[in-house]
Length: 64
Image (cartoon, rainbow, N blue to C red):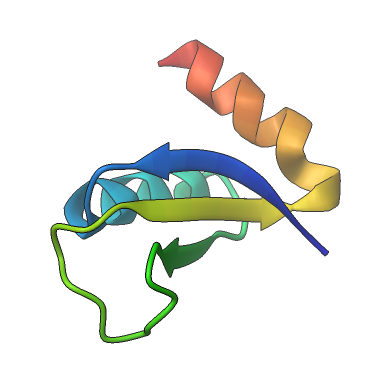
């Protein structure tokens, strides 16, 4: 099960967060606001992390 973690303004920012969290061994699911896999790059995206890893992701954000 996935938990909503962050909302970002575009796909570029979402990819940066995805790479950062993946480097710390946290899986990430990025979903565009429209829900389409081929969504526009400039639309908002939501970042999800596994339910049991939210505390790890929050700790990574605190370190930044």
